[in-house]
Image (cartoon, rainbow, N blue to C red):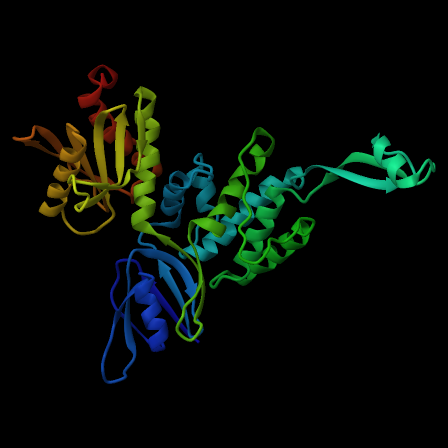
Length: 398
């Protein structure tokens, strides 16, 4: 098997892979494939996915350009069930250069802290015929089934069980991590130990993904459960292609989407206390015939009024005119008086403000420095929110 490491945003790397694998890499938008007609090795270049994936003839690791602690910070907002209050010193304690080893250690760290209180558990109602009384006697069943005999006794009772959704989720995530490429041998040994502890819960059916719901009773487990969700849902890639039954297994995060979701939740938490809803809009149309399709990243709206449109650009490319025209179309479609383009950059640049003549729209271009310390990233997001509020709710921004 060929083992290849790519850097997000990096250059070309030569690899010996089959045409089937090369096709899958392009189809799943994992990497750009440079093809040569003379049968020499393919050239691969990472796109916007980071993580690791295994094909029958290729094990591919894509390193993020962000540090793992910054990636985890973004994921904490992008996925609702992951704890957002991570401390940076806690993250760097198991900081790794690659996503998969870091994910395994993060999951082990969070699960170890959570299970110090014991396994998640609950109570299950059971109905049985027993030689002694336990719980409540089911009198009707006793008479119908045993015709007046004293034993056995039909009873109903509640029994303690560890086979609850939370334990099933942790077990499924542990089993999943053990199948993924790139997990360090030390972490793999600890995952096997964890699996032996979690085997009191039933294993999910093939293809089924267990779920859980945040409640006060499982609060102490929620960071571990949120990470388990990331493993099981957030970036998992597992499919069988039609060509030669190609089987792929991996954990990949699409950074464009992670950045969009980060802005949606981070800005939403600062804007919605002033009213309205802040969310992605899905597909809408610019024209009455529903032919000109568009999809906004984030819209802050209340009733029939749109306060602002926010568009995320996770790209190293410089500010482009096409992005501005795209934002003007968004604002015109929703009647928004302001639009904000937020670029994910390595160096913070001053915010650019453009006052559009007709229709009258305030267009802003911000650069969010994701390489900065986490407190500074929070301050940058707060500054963007303050700029939005200054136009939509002047009293709130003062």
